[in-house]
Image 1 (cartoon, rainbow, N blue to C red):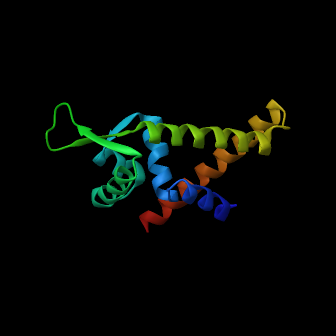
Image 2 (cartoon, rainbow, N blue to C red):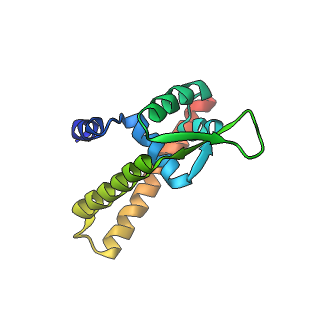
Length: 131
């Protein structure tokens, strides 16, 4: 499944990481490079390289920050917005294929289980960090 997803993204000129940037920007609307780095949990330098590539391929645009001349605000271009909308649509369709036959009660139970697992993983990660 992962290979299929990466192949589909590559056909659109995207890598998994670049698609993640488009997703984050699509949901946020606009972010500074520093805010984007924090969302991705990477250094601002890594984001610069990502944004350079996405800008060169027409997915994002650097715009002037309204109050900080040193910062740039990153926004999706029309091509980036179209790609984000397509990813959203594909994600929704895939979710329907996976979970479409479940009742609301079953979906709620499944969500509860996932939230419990996520909370436990966070707890384990936090405990590991204290050692």
